[in-house]
Amino acid sequence: MASMVPISGSAYTYTYATMGELLGWIIGWDLILEYLVGAATVAVGWSAYVVTFFKDVFSVEFTRKTTQAPVLWDNDALAFKVNNGAYINLPAIFVTLLVTALLIFGIKQATWVNRVVVVVKLIVILLFIFGACKYVDRSNYTPFVPPREGNSFGVKGVFKGTQRVFFAYIGFDAVSTAAQEAKDPQKDLPWGICASLAICTVLYIAVSTVLCGIASYKDLGVASPLTHALEFHDNTRWLRILIELGAICGLTSVILIMLLAQPRIFFAMARDGLFPRIFGRLHHRFKTPYVPTIVSGVVCAVLAGVLPVDILGDMTSVGTLLAFFLVNIGVIIMRYIHPEAQRGFTVPGGPFLIPIPGAAIALVILVLSDGPTIYRLFIWLAIGLLVYAVYGFRYSRVGNPEKWSEEDIAYFQDAGMLESDSEYPEKQSLESARSKHTVTSVVEMPEPRHFDVSSGGPNSYSHTGVYELDSPYPVYHK
Image (cartoon, rainbow, N blue to C red; front, side, top):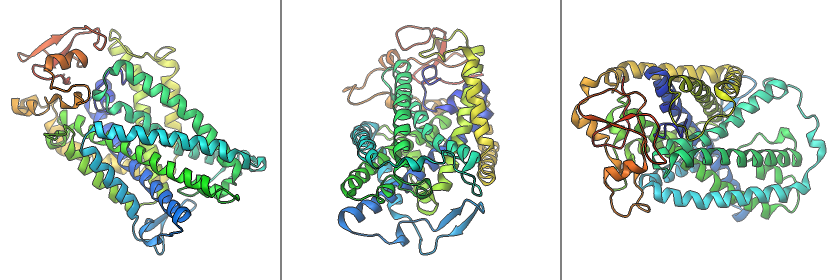
């Protein structure tokens, strides 16, 4: 789907294209929750590793008052409880605002930073796998599926663990949100997503195997489990320091990717008229959607400062599951409503072999989530439907074309997000941008200001699409 519809918006764009505006809005609103809460979750983990890093390196212990959330989640009672002595998580707020500022300055600078921290992260993950494997005690693998205790462990615990692990898939979804910044999205996106999925799967299995082998599963329910598990073994101080340093770098890159993706969801929805157009404003110098970046960063910082990691993680996971459920359905629908479209990547086995089990698995894991988690998701979606009824439905670009003036359309015709200073030292013409980033709209609606763009070149589709006259961006039409 990312290679077929390489537009900022990810699952929102795919759902909009296949299932219509209302479901597109629902999944877009869900993605807002997914990325905001996901970034906040990782920021809380970042804070925990910073605290342990200062403790191991400088023997400095930060007070709980400023490094933990004021509330905790009781998994057995399924209720909040007061975290006595804790008031706010300042390190989590700090890193969120720092990454937000970096993203405002542009994707070029953010990409350079991300490359560095990803390399550091991979090195440290390998250090943990090979450095800690000698401490593995096979008795920690027994019982392989621990007996159920309240709402934890047992078969239900396996499904809850699966839900938590599904959190990781938000990263693969985030890749597609920056599709318009890719040089060759039809080639780069499938390779990038599939390769990263394969590598991460292997590393996840290896890290989990070693982690559960060096400490009892009952001791791992903390925000910084890798270093916490190593504390049970002698002569691991330097290994803990290296892992903490890598975790700080690695989690920083994750926060960066999530806060990079979130404003592009806002941008795509504002472009379609579902949000006020200020959310689609690009900075005159940095060519980044700075308004939604600031809004996302501030809201994320607040969530990271006051909520515990398990609540944030659960909310992110259920949002991701809902998005992947609809994307799987969208793959099937797209095969039938646009069978002639050229695809950069085709799901093997036809339109049913993978999408139907994928949708079913996502739905089952979603249904088996804790009741309060599902309730919070429904409350968030209900708020979204209210926002849609008040604003989105009335100003939608598809449903209300008469409310879109030439000035409104021109507002989103900035090609800056497609152009990279490193690749385009001088501003290219729109014709040149089109030749490198040809993207066609889903359905053609003839109007005087439009013209047809047929296929041509490695990055274009085989079917005829529609562009606005002066823009490389595609526009959805009835």
